[in-house]
Every structure is written in C-alpha cells, then in structure tokens.
Length: 497
Image (tube, rainbow, N blue to C red; front, top):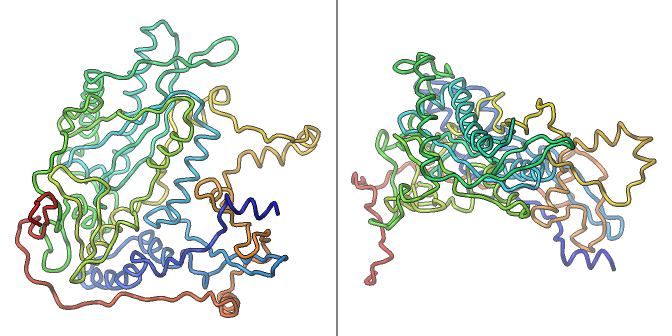
C-alpha cells in the first residue's frame, strides 16, 4: 500500500532509446562519411575526438552492457544500460553532469547567501585565438576573476571590513546558441564578501553593481587581456594548441558561422527568421557592459533562501551544448536547429548539412585534461579556512552517533561522494529507478552484464533489442540559394499570411 502511494508522486524508470532520436541517427550515418571526407584531403582528427563520437554511439545501447534489475514481487525484469560518461555533446551524459554539479554546489559548497551570475565573453576576432590556446584562456579567466574579486574587496574595505574574502565557481562554456564555437565564462559569485570574526566567518552583503562600475571592471579586464596577448607573443602570429590541421579548420568555420561542405562551402549558414524584429540592444541593459567586443553581464541574482532557483541557475550554467528537442529534419538533406531566443536580426533557426553539423560538434568537444569547472577564492579546495565558509551537507535525521564514531572512515568516504545516479533521477526528474513499473514494488540489482554475447541473449529473451534506423543519404542537391540568409522566411506578423 505504501509503495502504491509513493508511486503516485514518483514515476518509475523507463529507459530512453537513444538510437531512435535524430541526433544519434545523424551521427551513426554521417560520422563515417565525415571521417572519410577528411581522409580524402589528407587531414586527420585527434584521438579524443574520434573516441568521443565512438563512445557516444555506444551510450545507452544495452547491447554494449547493462545493469539487470528484478522485482521479486511480480518477477518483472528490467535493464539499465551503461553511459559513455563523455562531456562533449552527449545530451544524456551532459545532463547527468549538469545536475550532479548543481546538486553538489547547492548542497556542499555555496552557503545560504545571496548570489549573482557574472557572464564574460570575448570579441568575435579573438574567439579563435582563445579557443586554440589553452594557456591564454586560463590567463584570461584568472584576470576576469581577479578583477571581479578586487572590485568586491575594494567596496568592502571602503565599508570598514579588513581582509574580506570572496569565492566563485566558473563554468567554461564552449558553445553559442547556434552550436557555434564561442568560449565564454559563466560564474556564480556571492553578492558580498566574507570577513573573519572570533567565531569564524560572517557574510556582508554588498550593493548591486552599477552600470558605471561594470564598465570600469570591463575596461580593466580588456586592458589586461590585451596586455597578456602581447606579452605571450600572440598579437600577430600564435602557436595553435592542436597540431591537427583539420581540427583548426573546424574551429574556424564554427566561429565564423560558415559551411564547410556541399554547394554552400565557404559561405554563411542558411538562416531563417523574421526581419526587423524589435529586440532591446545590450547597451540599454543597466547590468551589462560592452567595451570593444568584451562583454560583461551581471543581471541575474538569486536571494539567499531561494536554493531551488540557485540550483536551476547552476544547471543553466553547466548545461550541455545540444537540446535534442530543438533539432529537426529539413528538406532536402538538411538539419534545422532552433535557437532558444531570437537573435537581434530576427534569426530563429539555422540550417546545416549533415556534414556541417558533424563539423560543429567536432569543434565543441573540449580537449582532454581541461577542467570545465573552476573554483576560486574561498571556495577553492586549497583555501585554508574553506571548511568555515562552505556549506556543510546536512546530516540525516536518526543517525546513530555511536555508529558514526565506530565507522568514522566509512562515513567520511560517504560524505565525499556525489549523488548517485538513482538519487539524481529522483531529485531532478522525480523518477525512481528502484520502483517496479508493473507493481510499484522494489527493483533489486541482480547482475552487471558486460559481455556482449551474454547481453544480446538476455536482451532477446526480454524483447529489449535496440532497433537502429540510420538516415538515408541523399546525394542529390537542392536548388541554388541566394546570398540572402532570409530567402525562405515567413513573416508571421504579416496578417495576409
């Protein structure tokens, strides 16, 4: 009876079938073609790029391995496939990483203080330089964080606080709204400073930044970034981070919003939308400063008690590049991607050939050993008083204190664990993987299947074999297009339409 009542609130788990969505079918069909096209012109791709695509094609496919579950009440048998655990573009694994990071920051890092999101982006002409040179990107990130924290400390010292401390967590995003390569920083920073007292640290809230102050900070960041480029000898000629010529070309066409394959090679992507749409320019936003292409925005703030909204904000900051629900098929032989919000010129959709779409994904994959989440200031692991500031995970009620003393090492290990996959599904999507979908009983894990031959036999007995439907490759081309990006637009504001 209790399980039945719980099932009314928590949904049971039903595995998704990635092989049936458009993203998987596109990569399954055109990734080998893309590799062959690069090989024909004597170009190669790095191993980490090839591994990213190969592992994605195995993500969520039970034939590659799964965990088997069983309900002893109704004898229902289920499966949970393995994931690729990649961080490039896989929607499932990026969503898992996004929700895990948000839950960790809210539960175990950021204390209950007002916070603000700061966003910093680079000029268009500098984006390829930042994307190709990781040392320069790290230097620019350090300058950006130091200037914001210096700005907060100066205001706190003017208010009479000595040695104020500030913390931050930065998410490095590599993508724009049209799947273009655009490295920029999303940072969550407390809207104030921490100062030390006899009993520990206390928080002092600062006033929200004014437009003049944002412009002053943006000017300082711009000046120091340009000086860093000049000191590193990158003003004119610079060393690329990757030796592979093909990857550099993919990054270049992604930043410049151009096609690399088909009859539109070298020209701009086809765009659709409404002309003369009325969009407020960034210059009228009092929380946004733009200096010679360097953009600094601090418009989003979260109250101290609204932890749910803070978690939603961090999910947005840590999200993956692709929203599969906005990807659709066009004709002939095209993919159409819908932007979350229109551009200033009214663009709402962009169109790719399938090979151009693969090229966009190649450019978005981060290089290995590059941390995409950075901790700064008093939130950094090496800060000596971090335990006095960061939020401590709440202890579950009813915990036996004697058990904690006798099993101290085990408890410490559990404390450092992130949320497990089953707990993450329950917290984020209200889905309980341990609830039987047939009788609402409890599912138990009975086996981990890694052998592909054994997995196939079990899947055949359960009727869970994957059904692959690759796309049909159309060789014929459509009619030639004009240089006007809005040639196929439909103005929905026209009453005669």
